[in-house]
Image 1 (cartoon, helix red, strand yellow):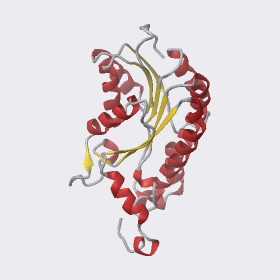
Image 2 (image 1 turned 60 degrees about the vertical axis):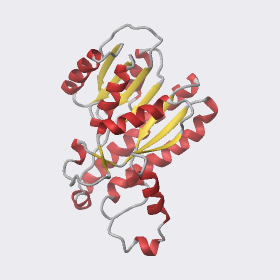
Image 3 (image 1 turned 180 degrees about the vertical axis):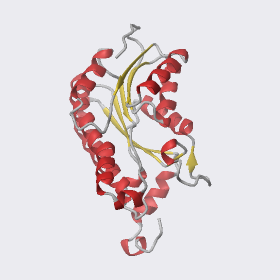
Image 4 (image 1 turned 30 degrees about the vertical axis):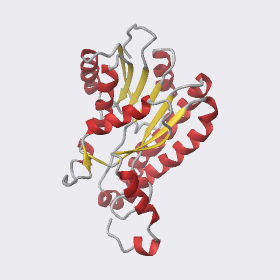
Length: 257
């Protein structure tokens, strides 16, 4: 991990999966605000390039460290180093993940389990390490990026969705636990976002959003001390998912979703 010194008056931000499209767009917003950033991701070359970009954009300091969400080891050391980099954190956002094709995962149990480990188990491990630190600090915000896919199982992506359902419940429980300590837990539910992870999907129609739009809404919600609970981004996913959740099972089973 690289080291730099800076004023303690700027926000201290941890981004896990920092080289993903949404996290990169979010990091650039924090950099423009002069934040101090800790970036974790698997690709060290991409991390180094992103760190250079963020310094140019105004980040007060940038620390980088490799993190592989597929590693089964408890990430205690990575979280401890990230926490110590600036003497605590004001914001932590978990934004890593994979999305194998449903058909591929359904035909390959090992692939399905590996994806679940990255999309759910690694989040649980990271949050279990972060939660007591935020709780003791008694302030800050944790952002957990999940997906509307976790709100109701659908034939087209239920294996991906089951991991996101885990995150929805995990964020809810953490929010309940940390509320008394003054720590917010924001569940972030992006809809269809035009990123490399969705490259195989057809991209047409008004439901698709850019990483920059989603990052702008995430940044606003994370920065708002009154904002807690769930952020649907773009906003129209809230009524869409309200309808999807409300459909009676007999009707839902006839839908092709």
